[in-house]
Image 1 (cartoon, rainbow, N blue to C red):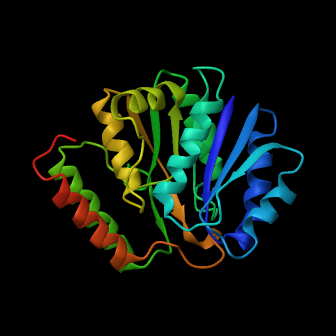
Image 2 (cartoon, rainbow, N blue to C red):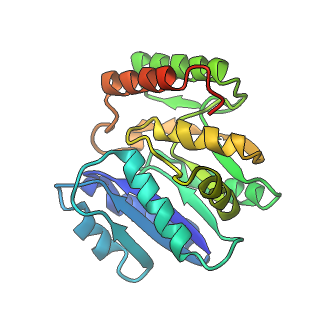
Image 3 (cartoon, one colour):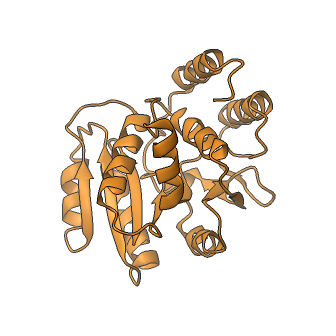
Length: 242
């Protein structure tokens, strides 16, 4: 079984394209779609139910806005509680169509070679940004460089949502840490990556171009708020191996 975990927050205008892309790419596979809604007020949950009514799917969330970390953790926990096969895999991606769906075949094939975690990376050779402003690229680059140095991590992209996890890795993280993700903001992707590394998982990166032009509306990430969250994370875990 392939579980596709997608956090959503007011993505109504992006959902139709997302559904079309997913169906075209995954229609021949055994897929269960897990949407973890973070308190959307634009009718996103209702639209998901309409678009995915003929698929295996669930929409999680109680209407509260708790942040992407909370949404991801809720989704991961639901999958761990409902998966019936240790060989299942979990794909995570953005709901706004900036995750390049054409890369998914390569990511799934590579995962089958024995990797616990496959990351789509804008910083790997061949990856990059399409029409992203300089300030956002600078902040992303600086944050990635800072945290790679601080935590002695060789991974190039630390915060991307677009990943393929083995279920076995998620179970090991849960067994060691109890909770997969505690951080509620976008820093959650760094948190679960560090936990993955400390369980001794096999990780590989695949180059991806982030295509902001595929998104309707603006990114939900607030640069100032996210920067403060990253600094807070750095301070809390200063001197810690995590």
